[in-house]
Image (cartoon, rainbow, N blue to C red; front, side, top):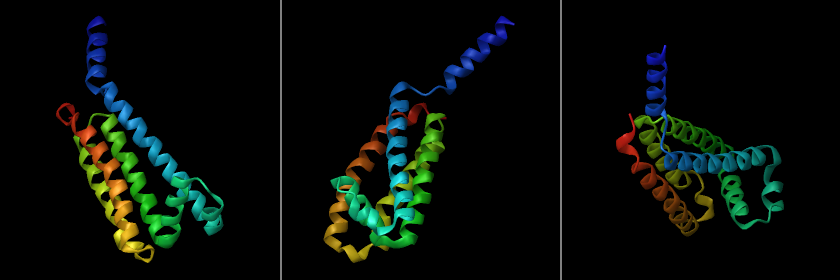
Length: 150
């Protein structure tokens, strides 16, 4: 009986992610949640919501999403869900989560080039630079834990 308990405790310790990885996962999930809420609000609130919201960061996000149309919103929605799923795998200490996160984030960075040209190349490049900083930061921070992932 005690041996089984010891094995279960040892197994729990192997599955448990380090606290730093958990913090990164929670921060990533929070960002995904905010993005998903804004996308859902935009899908059901329309363009009037984009103009009604006057917070600078939220206003910029809604402007991008509304300029891209419904396909941009739907694709972004799917890829943000994919990013959240990747972070779940990272939470569970799985290497596949890192590569899934990396791939999905690269697609999310490049998606505006495909679907929101009407905002202008300069706008997209500035947006890419800002988004790339956070994306690269999170990928680098997640990569510190890559060696311990299974």
